[in-house]
Amino acid sequence: MPRAPRTPAEYWDTYMPHREMGDQPAPPADRFEWTQYPGHGPGAELLGEPHRALDLGPAEGREAVYLARLGVEMTGVDLSPVQVERARTWWDDVPGLTFVHADVRDYLAEEAQLFDAIYSVWGAVWFTDPEQLLPLVAERLVPGGVLAFSQAEPAPGAYGPQPMRGKWLEGREHELTVLRWQYTPEAWTDLLKRHGFTEIHASVLEAPEPGKLGTLLVRARTCA
Image (cartoon, rainbow, N blue to C red; front, top):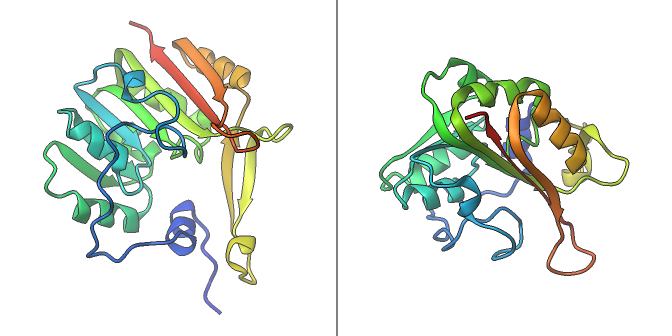
């Protein structure tokens, strides 16, 4: 029996559905989406008007493509080599757009350039210890730069690093555990304050239909 994947990248590449490499994905929507419900909630205005932005965990890169087509100099960093290869193949004709295969912590620690905005749409912020990630993000933002991210609303009482197990997804004998960091809006506010962020807005955006999963949406700035 094949070895079960042991890293978040292997989890994604093993369990998530894929298109064939030669297929072009559907064109990006005409707005920036933070939630899983098209047209629901705010759009790219949360990022201000960045000249240079960084997408942490872009997967196939739809949001990065949207911003690049508006003239933003875009970089997307993803831990999955499969996703990075797909994104590079699908969007190689979009100017000002670069995809990098790396752990976001390593990239932020080693990269010298600064960004006007750093964001994550159900991406790497969800799967990375904020105590490690937030100080690295703060160092790579210009003064007054924006950090914004979205992820699933936390289940009541399920706060901090929560295991997401792979066995039930695919029925394999061996189970993969990937951690996701989930906090209340109040806890995210405290975390961001402690790491030097200001103008913090953290809340749960309710789903457009009753009974559906809401979206945690957070925006903050570095000190100007």
